[in-house]
Image 1 (cartoon, one colour):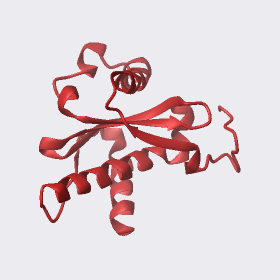
Image 2 (cartoon, helix red, strand yellow):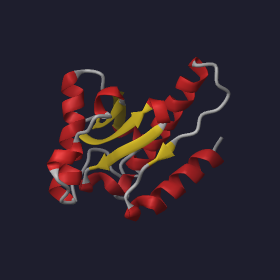
Image 3 (tube, rainbow, N blue to C red):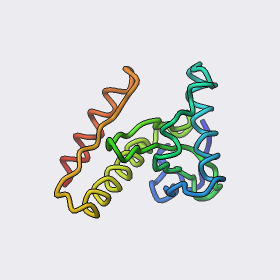
Amino acid sequence: MRQLAGMANDRAPSTEFHIIHATKPEDFKRCMDVRLKVFVDEQGYDPKIEQDEYDHTSAHFLLVHTPTSEAVGNVRFYPPSNKLGRLAVLPAFRSYKLGAKLVDHVTLYAIEQARQRGEKEAVVMCHSQAHAIGFYEKVFLTFLGSN
């Protein structure tokens, strides 16, 4: 397992990571690099389907390990349907609850977007691989329960 600066009890504090809205081409490329490592290299999906027609109209968020500037995760949010997808965290960073951090960030983004449109609520949908359903159930219940 990769050692991170300031780790205690094999947990990296969430302050060692930050999330950026990937609006620049170089940040979008970093998101795609993470997605390719996780979905193509690790999980064996066809690289031809990893990037799709929704990428250019979606908001992309990049999770960065602050001390090293390494891109370690990402998530995509498609505003027309309020759909969260393509969440990926590199294997060495999965025990730090960073997927939950990305989901929380996107959910707050969706709420803010809804407010700007004058809406009183936002519903975030998620398309998930079957093995990740438990993660999303836990994350969404945790997020909703904390507000």
